[in-house]
Amino acid sequence: MAKAASGNTSTAAGTASATVVAPIVLTHTTGASLNFGKFTVGAGGTVVVNSTGTGSVTSDVGFVPGGSSTTADQFSLTGDNSRNFGISTTNGTITNGSKTMSFTTAPSSTTGTTSATGTYSFTVGGTLTVTGTETPGAYTGTYNATVVYQ
Image (cartoon, rainbow, N blue to C red):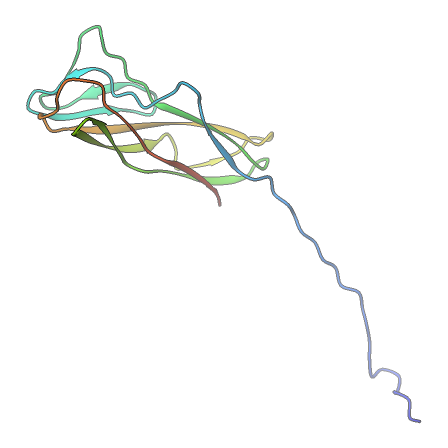
């Protein structure tokens, strides 16, 4: 019987590794909302709420003196420590019966990095389009915020 000559084969051990990352979890702050305030519609225009919650109006829309307050929405997230992520938000509509107003959203940042303990918070402002044909009353709606590791 023939034997393999020395040097015809060789074996070495390889290594393997994996890293499990904490899932990214987005939470809406209880009681917070993107609030466009109280206003009169006139011939229409926009209501703008920046990411700090400060509101302004354009064209023929007017805030109700002493009776209007605007706020930016608020979110927090937990995830892997010191990990980069992206933020996106959708547009939406608010309705009152058959009347609808459209709005766009703008997060305070489109990217972020979790803290050394894996946390981060951000706000969302937006721009509401007012046509001038809206009826008086309360309008409500929703939109989505999404975070994803990068």
